Length: 204
Length: 238
Image (cartoon, rainbow over all chains, first blue to last red; front, side):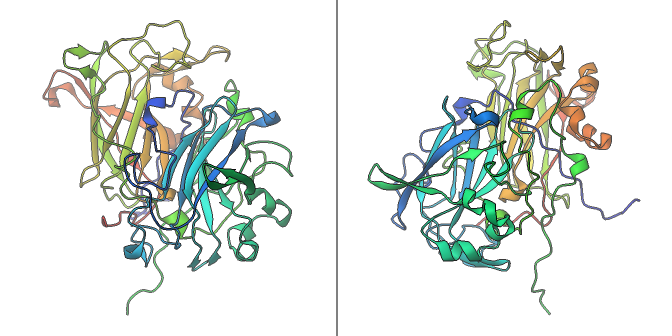
Protein backbone atom coordinates (compact mmCIF):
# COMPACT_ATOMS: atom_id res chain seq x y z
CA UNK A 1 0.00 0.00 0.00
CA UNK A 2 1.36 3.40 -0.93
CA UNK A 3 1.03 6.08 1.69
CA UNK A 4 1.91 9.45 0.22
CA UNK A 5 3.02 10.94 3.53
CA UNK A 6 4.70 7.83 4.84
CA UNK A 7 7.89 8.57 6.74
CA UNK A 8 11.21 7.53 5.26
CA UNK A 9 12.30 4.09 6.46
CA UNK A 10 15.30 4.25 8.81
CA UNK A 11 18.60 3.00 7.44
CA UNK A 12 19.42 -0.53 8.60
CA UNK A 13 21.91 -1.21 11.36
CA UNK A 14 25.14 -3.16 10.88
CA UNK A 15 27.88 -4.33 13.22
CA UNK A 16 30.94 -2.21 14.00
CA UNK A 17 32.93 -5.28 12.91
CA UNK A 18 36.25 -6.34 14.43
CA UNK A 19 38.20 -3.21 13.48
CA UNK A 20 36.57 -0.26 15.24
CA UNK A 21 39.51 2.15 15.41
CA UNK A 22 41.28 2.46 18.72
CA UNK A 23 42.32 5.88 17.51
CA UNK A 24 38.73 7.05 17.98
CA UNK A 25 39.19 6.80 21.73
CA UNK A 26 40.82 9.69 23.49
CA UNK A 27 41.80 10.06 27.09
CA UNK A 28 38.75 11.09 29.04
CA UNK A 29 36.14 9.56 26.74
CA UNK A 30 35.09 7.20 29.55
CA UNK A 31 35.10 10.01 32.14
CA UNK A 32 31.64 11.56 32.29
CA UNK A 33 32.59 13.87 35.15
CA UNK A 34 34.47 16.09 32.65
CA UNK A 35 33.34 17.57 29.35
CA UNK A 36 36.78 16.69 27.96
CA UNK A 37 40.09 15.38 29.23
CA UNK A 38 41.26 18.98 29.70
CA UNK A 39 38.11 20.27 31.44
CA UNK A 40 37.69 20.61 35.19
CA UNK A 41 35.37 18.02 36.72
CA UNK A 42 31.83 19.03 37.56
CA UNK A 43 31.23 20.12 41.13
CA UNK A 44 27.72 18.67 41.24
CA UNK A 45 26.93 15.22 42.57
CA UNK A 46 28.87 12.25 43.89
CA UNK A 47 31.59 10.98 41.58
CA UNK A 48 31.55 7.21 41.25
CA UNK A 49 33.18 4.45 39.22
CA UNK A 50 31.06 2.10 37.15
CA UNK A 51 33.04 -0.90 35.97
CA UNK A 52 32.71 -4.52 35.02
CA UNK A 53 33.25 -7.04 32.27
CA UNK A 54 31.49 -7.86 29.03
CA UNK A 55 31.26 -11.60 28.49
CA UNK A 56 30.06 -13.61 25.52
CA UNK A 57 28.65 -17.13 25.37
CA UNK A 58 30.48 -19.50 27.71
CA UNK A 59 31.57 -16.61 29.92
CA UNK A 60 34.50 -15.76 27.65
CA UNK A 61 35.59 -12.13 27.59
CA UNK A 62 34.15 -10.03 24.80
CA UNK A 63 37.25 -8.22 23.64
CA UNK A 64 37.09 -4.92 21.79
CA UNK A 65 33.47 -4.17 22.59
CA UNK A 66 32.42 -0.53 22.72
CA UNK A 67 30.13 0.68 25.51
CA UNK A 68 28.31 3.97 25.26
CA UNK A 69 26.80 5.46 28.41
CA UNK A 70 24.06 8.08 28.63
CA UNK A 71 22.56 9.41 31.83
CA UNK A 72 20.98 12.37 33.60
CA UNK A 73 23.03 14.75 35.72
CA UNK A 74 23.08 14.61 39.51
CA UNK A 75 19.71 16.42 39.64
CA UNK A 76 18.06 14.14 37.08
CA UNK A 77 18.26 16.60 34.16
CA UNK A 78 19.36 16.25 30.55
CA UNK A 79 20.90 19.04 28.52
CA UNK A 80 18.35 18.48 25.73
CA UNK A 81 15.22 20.44 24.78
CA UNK A 82 12.98 17.40 25.38
CA UNK A 83 13.74 17.87 29.09
CA UNK A 84 11.56 20.69 30.46
CA UNK A 85 14.36 21.48 32.95
CA UNK A 86 17.19 21.43 30.43
CA UNK A 87 18.19 25.06 31.02
CA UNK A 88 19.02 24.16 34.60
CA UNK A 89 21.01 21.09 33.61
CA UNK A 90 24.62 20.93 34.83
CA UNK A 91 26.67 22.91 32.25
CA UNK A 92 29.79 20.93 33.17
CA UNK A 93 28.18 17.58 32.51
CA UNK A 94 27.67 16.08 29.07
CA UNK A 95 26.05 12.84 30.27
CA UNK A 96 27.72 10.77 27.56
CA UNK A 97 30.83 8.62 27.56
CA UNK A 98 32.42 5.79 25.64
CA UNK A 99 34.60 2.93 26.84
CA UNK A 100 36.08 -0.15 25.21
CA UNK A 101 36.81 -3.55 26.64
CA UNK A 102 40.32 -4.93 27.08
CA UNK A 103 41.62 -8.49 26.70
CA UNK A 104 39.69 -9.50 29.85
CA UNK A 105 36.51 -7.89 28.60
CA UNK A 106 36.85 -5.22 31.29
CA UNK A 107 35.54 -1.67 30.98
CA UNK A 108 35.36 1.30 33.32
CA UNK A 109 33.53 4.62 33.50
CA UNK A 110 34.05 7.47 35.93
CA UNK A 111 30.78 9.32 36.29
CA UNK A 112 28.35 11.10 38.56
CA UNK A 113 25.62 9.32 40.51
CA UNK A 114 22.61 10.26 38.37
CA UNK A 115 19.46 11.77 39.79
CA UNK A 116 16.03 10.28 39.26
CA UNK A 117 13.23 12.25 37.62
CA UNK A 118 9.51 12.18 36.95
CA UNK A 119 8.66 10.82 33.51
CA UNK A 120 5.18 10.50 31.94
CA UNK A 121 5.77 6.73 32.05
CA UNK A 122 6.44 6.82 35.80
CA UNK A 123 9.10 7.88 38.31
CA UNK A 124 12.55 7.00 37.01
CA UNK A 125 15.07 5.74 39.54
CA UNK A 126 18.68 6.87 39.14
CA UNK A 127 20.09 4.91 36.21
CA UNK A 128 22.66 4.82 33.42
CA UNK A 129 21.71 3.58 29.97
CA UNK A 130 24.38 1.45 28.31
CA UNK A 131 24.63 0.47 24.65
CA UNK A 132 26.92 -2.37 23.60
CA UNK A 133 28.56 -2.51 20.17
CA UNK A 134 30.90 -5.31 19.07
CA UNK A 135 31.82 -7.50 16.16
CA UNK A 136 28.89 -9.84 15.52
CA UNK A 137 26.36 -7.59 17.26
CA UNK A 138 24.45 -6.47 14.20
CA UNK A 139 22.32 -3.98 16.16
CA UNK A 140 23.44 -2.34 19.37
CA UNK A 141 22.27 -3.98 22.57
CA UNK A 142 20.69 -1.60 25.05
CA UNK A 143 20.35 -2.09 28.77
CA UNK A 144 20.04 0.03 31.91
CA UNK A 145 22.12 0.02 35.07
CA UNK A 146 20.40 0.72 38.38
CA UNK A 147 22.01 1.26 41.78
CA UNK A 148 21.59 -0.64 45.05
CA UNK A 149 21.30 2.65 46.99
CA UNK A 150 17.71 3.16 45.84
CA UNK A 151 15.64 0.01 46.41
CA UNK A 152 12.29 1.84 46.67
CA UNK A 153 12.88 3.96 43.59
CA UNK A 154 14.07 0.89 41.68
CA UNK A 155 10.88 -0.94 42.58
CA UNK A 156 8.77 1.87 41.12
CA UNK A 157 10.88 2.41 37.98
CA UNK A 158 8.76 1.79 34.84
CA UNK A 159 11.68 0.39 32.84
CA UNK A 160 12.89 -1.97 35.55
CA UNK A 161 9.28 -3.06 36.09
CA UNK A 162 9.14 -4.10 32.43
CA UNK A 163 11.73 -6.79 33.26
CA UNK A 164 10.49 -10.13 34.64
CA UNK A 165 10.78 -9.92 38.41
CA UNK A 166 13.30 -12.72 38.76
CA UNK A 167 15.71 -11.00 36.38
CA UNK A 168 15.60 -7.47 37.79
CA UNK A 169 18.54 -8.05 40.12
CA UNK A 170 20.73 -8.55 37.02
CA UNK A 171 20.29 -4.85 36.22
CA UNK A 172 21.30 -3.56 39.65
CA UNK A 173 25.02 -2.81 39.96
CA UNK A 174 26.80 -4.24 43.00
CA UNK A 175 28.96 -2.26 45.44
CA UNK A 176 32.59 -2.87 44.51
CA UNK A 177 34.57 -1.15 47.24
CA UNK A 178 36.44 2.09 46.76
CA UNK A 179 39.00 3.07 44.13
CA UNK A 180 40.68 6.39 43.46
CA UNK A 181 38.82 7.71 46.51
CA UNK A 182 35.43 6.99 44.94
CA UNK A 183 32.70 4.46 45.55
CA UNK A 184 32.82 1.83 42.84
CA UNK A 185 29.97 -0.21 41.39
CA UNK A 186 30.29 -3.40 39.39
CA UNK A 187 28.03 -4.22 36.46
CA UNK A 188 28.92 -7.29 34.40
CA UNK A 189 27.20 -8.02 31.12
CA UNK A 190 26.65 -11.54 29.82
CA UNK A 191 25.64 -11.11 26.20
CA UNK A 192 24.44 -14.67 25.76
CA UNK A 193 23.97 -17.35 28.38
CA UNK A 194 21.61 -19.22 30.65
CA UNK A 195 18.13 -17.67 30.99
CA UNK A 196 18.75 -16.73 34.63
CA UNK A 197 22.17 -15.22 33.94
CA UNK A 198 21.97 -13.51 30.54
CA UNK A 199 21.77 -9.74 30.91
CA UNK A 200 18.29 -8.41 30.11
CA UNK A 201 18.38 -6.20 27.04
CA UNK A 202 15.57 -3.95 25.88
CA UNK A 203 13.89 -3.31 22.58
CA UNK A 204 15.94 -0.51 21.09
CA UNK B 1 -5.59 24.70 22.08
CA UNK B 2 -1.99 23.74 22.46
CA UNK B 3 -1.22 20.13 22.07
CA UNK B 4 -0.23 18.63 25.40
CA UNK B 5 1.09 15.28 24.34
CA UNK B 6 4.02 15.36 21.95
CA UNK B 7 3.56 13.26 18.83
CA UNK B 8 5.04 9.81 19.07
CA UNK B 9 8.53 10.60 17.88
CA UNK B 10 10.04 7.16 18.03
CA UNK B 11 8.68 3.76 17.09
CA UNK B 12 10.49 0.44 17.40
CA UNK B 13 12.33 -0.58 14.25
CA UNK B 14 10.64 -2.58 11.53
CA UNK B 15 12.28 -5.97 12.11
CA UNK B 16 12.09 -6.97 8.44
CA UNK B 17 14.36 -4.08 7.53
CA UNK B 18 17.01 -4.83 10.18
CA UNK B 19 19.65 -7.60 10.16
CA UNK B 20 18.56 -11.07 11.25
CA UNK B 21 21.05 -13.00 13.39
CA UNK B 22 22.90 -15.28 13.64
CA UNK B 23 24.70 -15.17 10.29
CA UNK B 24 26.26 -18.37 8.97
CA UNK B 25 30.02 -17.99 8.62
CA UNK B 26 30.22 -15.15 11.18
CA UNK B 27 30.95 -16.89 14.47
CA UNK B 28 30.62 -13.79 16.66
CA UNK B 29 26.97 -13.46 15.68
CA UNK B 30 26.37 -16.80 17.42
CA UNK B 31 28.30 -15.93 20.60
CA UNK B 32 27.29 -12.36 21.22
CA UNK B 33 23.61 -11.97 20.47
CA UNK B 34 21.25 -12.68 23.36
CA UNK B 35 19.15 -15.81 23.37
CA UNK B 36 16.29 -13.98 25.09
CA UNK B 37 14.22 -11.67 22.90
CA UNK B 38 14.66 -8.00 23.79
CA UNK B 39 12.25 -6.79 26.47
CA UNK B 40 9.75 -4.07 25.47
CA UNK B 41 10.19 -0.89 27.51
CA UNK B 42 8.59 2.54 27.64
CA UNK B 43 10.68 5.17 25.88
CA UNK B 44 11.32 7.57 28.73
CA UNK B 45 13.25 10.82 28.65
CA UNK B 46 16.59 9.02 28.93
CA UNK B 47 16.00 7.23 25.62
CA UNK B 48 14.45 10.21 23.84
CA UNK B 49 17.26 12.60 24.68
CA UNK B 50 20.94 12.46 23.83
CA UNK B 51 24.06 14.59 23.79
CA UNK B 52 23.64 17.53 21.43
CA UNK B 53 27.22 18.75 21.44
CA UNK B 54 29.75 15.98 21.50
CA UNK B 55 32.57 18.12 20.12
CA UNK B 56 34.44 18.34 23.45
CA UNK B 57 34.78 14.56 23.50
CA UNK B 58 34.57 13.53 19.84
CA UNK B 59 36.63 16.12 18.03
CA UNK B 60 35.54 16.55 14.41
CA UNK B 61 37.62 17.93 11.58
CA UNK B 62 38.96 14.88 9.78
CA UNK B 63 37.02 14.50 6.57
CA UNK B 64 39.86 13.68 4.16
CA UNK B 65 41.03 10.13 4.61
CA UNK B 66 42.89 10.13 1.30
CA UNK B 67 45.65 12.54 2.39
CA UNK B 68 47.23 11.99 5.81
CA UNK B 69 49.76 14.83 5.46
CA UNK B 70 50.77 17.26 2.71
CA UNK B 71 52.11 15.21 -0.18
CA UNK B 72 51.24 11.89 1.45
CA UNK B 73 48.42 10.56 -0.66
CA UNK B 74 46.86 7.14 -0.20
CA UNK B 75 47.03 4.51 -2.91
CA UNK B 76 43.77 3.69 -4.60
CA UNK B 77 40.90 5.28 -6.44
CA UNK B 78 40.15 8.71 -5.00
CA UNK B 79 36.46 9.07 -4.22
CA UNK B 80 34.20 11.71 -2.75
CA UNK B 81 31.19 10.56 -0.75
CA UNK B 82 28.44 12.97 0.21
CA UNK B 83 24.84 12.97 1.23
CA UNK B 84 22.44 14.00 3.94
CA UNK B 85 21.59 12.67 7.35
CA UNK B 86 17.80 12.84 7.62
CA UNK B 87 15.12 12.06 10.16
CA UNK B 88 12.11 9.95 9.18
CA UNK B 89 10.28 13.08 8.05
CA UNK B 90 13.06 13.84 5.59
CA UNK B 91 14.37 16.78 7.61
CA UNK B 92 18.12 17.25 7.66
CA UNK B 93 19.77 16.53 11.00
CA UNK B 94 22.28 19.29 11.74
CA UNK B 95 25.30 18.78 13.96
CA UNK B 96 25.27 14.99 13.87
CA UNK B 97 28.66 13.34 14.45
CA UNK B 98 29.62 11.07 11.53
CA UNK B 99 32.49 8.65 12.17
CA UNK B 100 34.00 6.61 9.35
CA UNK B 101 36.45 3.76 9.11
CA UNK B 102 37.41 1.43 6.31
CA UNK B 103 40.02 -0.88 4.80
CA UNK B 104 42.69 0.38 2.43
CA UNK B 105 42.67 -0.24 -1.32
CA UNK B 106 44.07 -3.73 -0.74
CA UNK B 107 41.29 -4.61 1.69
CA UNK B 108 43.37 -4.34 4.85
CA UNK B 109 42.60 -2.28 7.93
CA UNK B 110 45.16 -0.14 9.71
CA UNK B 111 44.44 -2.01 12.91
CA UNK B 112 46.72 -4.42 14.79
CA UNK B 113 43.85 -6.91 14.92
CA UNK B 114 43.82 -7.21 11.12
CA UNK B 115 46.61 -9.72 10.55
CA UNK B 116 45.77 -10.64 6.98
CA UNK B 117 48.64 -10.94 4.52
CA UNK B 118 47.74 -7.90 2.42
CA UNK B 119 49.85 -4.76 2.20
CA UNK B 120 49.41 -1.82 4.53
CA UNK B 121 49.56 1.60 2.94
CA UNK B 122 51.87 3.93 4.91
CA UNK B 123 49.75 6.84 3.69
CA UNK B 124 46.39 5.49 4.75
CA UNK B 125 44.87 5.12 8.20
CA UNK B 126 41.25 5.11 7.13
CA UNK B 127 39.51 6.81 10.05
CA UNK B 128 37.63 10.09 9.99
CA UNK B 129 35.09 12.12 11.88
CA UNK B 130 32.98 15.01 10.67
CA UNK B 131 29.80 16.91 11.53
CA UNK B 132 26.70 17.46 9.42
CA UNK B 133 26.03 21.07 8.43
CA UNK B 134 22.84 23.04 8.99
CA UNK B 135 20.99 21.09 6.30
CA UNK B 136 22.27 17.74 7.55
CA UNK B 137 24.84 17.39 4.77
CA UNK B 138 28.07 15.48 5.22
CA UNK B 139 30.95 14.85 2.81
CA UNK B 140 34.35 13.25 2.85
CA UNK B 141 37.20 12.27 0.57
CA UNK B 142 38.68 8.82 0.78
CA UNK B 143 39.87 6.01 -1.45
CA UNK B 144 37.68 3.17 -2.53
CA UNK B 145 38.23 0.31 -0.07
CA UNK B 146 39.22 -3.11 -1.32
CA UNK B 147 37.26 -6.31 -0.81
CA UNK B 148 38.64 -8.93 1.56
CA UNK B 149 37.96 -12.55 2.46
CA UNK B 150 36.37 -13.18 5.85
CA UNK B 151 38.77 -15.37 7.85
CA UNK B 152 37.75 -18.93 8.82
CA UNK B 153 34.43 -18.48 7.18
CA UNK B 154 34.11 -20.91 4.31
CA UNK B 155 35.11 -18.54 1.55
CA UNK B 156 33.00 -15.50 1.59
CA UNK B 157 34.21 -12.04 0.92
CA UNK B 158 33.22 -8.66 2.19
CA UNK B 159 32.50 -6.34 -0.72
CA UNK B 160 34.02 -2.87 -0.62
CA UNK B 161 32.32 -1.02 2.23
CA UNK B 162 32.78 1.92 4.58
CA UNK B 163 31.79 1.68 8.24
CA UNK B 164 29.71 4.62 9.40
CA UNK B 165 28.71 5.59 12.94
CA UNK B 166 26.28 8.45 13.51
CA UNK B 167 25.43 10.15 16.78
CA UNK B 168 22.29 12.16 16.20
CA UNK B 169 19.94 14.14 18.41
CA UNK B 170 18.78 11.31 20.65
CA UNK B 171 20.04 7.97 21.86
CA UNK B 172 17.15 6.34 19.97
CA UNK B 173 18.47 7.82 16.74
CA UNK B 174 21.96 6.30 17.19
CA UNK B 175 23.03 4.40 14.10
CA UNK B 176 26.00 2.26 13.13
CA UNK B 177 25.93 0.82 9.66
CA UNK B 178 27.98 0.17 6.54
CA UNK B 179 27.89 1.85 3.15
CA UNK B 180 28.26 -0.31 0.06
CA UNK B 181 28.86 0.64 -3.57
CA UNK B 182 26.20 0.12 -6.23
CA UNK B 183 27.06 -2.38 -8.92
CA UNK B 184 29.64 -4.40 -6.99
CA UNK B 185 29.27 -8.08 -7.93
CA UNK B 186 30.16 -9.15 -4.37
CA UNK B 187 27.15 -7.30 -2.95
CA UNK B 188 24.82 -10.08 -4.07
CA UNK B 189 26.79 -12.59 -1.97
CA UNK B 190 27.52 -10.54 1.12
CA UNK B 191 26.07 -12.20 4.18
CA UNK B 192 25.78 -8.99 6.16
CA UNK B 193 23.99 -7.00 3.48
CA UNK B 194 21.75 -9.98 2.76
CA UNK B 195 20.94 -10.47 6.45
CA UNK B 196 18.24 -7.83 5.98
CA UNK B 197 15.11 -9.97 5.47
CA UNK B 198 13.34 -7.33 3.41
CA UNK B 199 15.20 -7.18 0.09
CA UNK B 200 13.87 -3.66 -0.44
CA UNK B 201 15.88 -2.48 2.59
CA UNK B 202 19.22 -3.59 1.10
CA UNK B 203 19.60 -1.00 -1.68
CA UNK B 204 19.23 1.71 0.94
CA UNK B 205 22.76 0.81 2.06
CA UNK B 206 24.21 1.31 -1.43
CA UNK B 207 25.88 4.55 -2.44
CA UNK B 208 24.95 5.71 -5.92
CA UNK B 209 27.67 6.81 -8.28
CA UNK B 210 27.23 10.34 -9.59
CA UNK B 211 27.77 10.44 -13.38
CA UNK B 212 31.39 11.56 -13.92
CA UNK B 213 30.32 14.35 -16.29
CA UNK B 214 28.52 15.96 -13.35
CA UNK B 215 31.61 15.85 -11.11
CA UNK B 216 33.87 18.89 -11.07
CA UNK B 217 37.09 17.25 -10.03
CA UNK B 218 39.42 14.37 -10.70
CA UNK B 219 37.70 11.87 -8.52
CA UNK B 220 34.74 9.57 -8.64
CA UNK B 221 31.80 10.77 -6.61
CA UNK B 222 29.14 8.86 -4.73
CA UNK B 223 25.96 9.93 -3.04
CA UNK B 224 24.33 8.28 -0.04
CA UNK B 225 21.59 9.55 2.26
CA UNK B 226 21.17 8.13 5.75
CA UNK B 227 17.85 8.08 7.62
CA UNK B 228 17.98 8.10 11.41
CA UNK B 229 15.06 6.80 13.39
CA UNK B 230 12.71 9.44 14.74
CA UNK B 231 10.11 11.90 13.52
CA UNK B 232 10.30 15.61 14.32
CA UNK B 233 13.62 14.48 15.65
CA UNK B 234 15.65 17.54 14.89
CA UNK B 235 15.68 19.74 18.00
CA UNK B 236 17.02 23.28 17.96
CA UNK B 237 20.53 23.57 19.27
CA UNK B 238 20.54 24.71 22.91
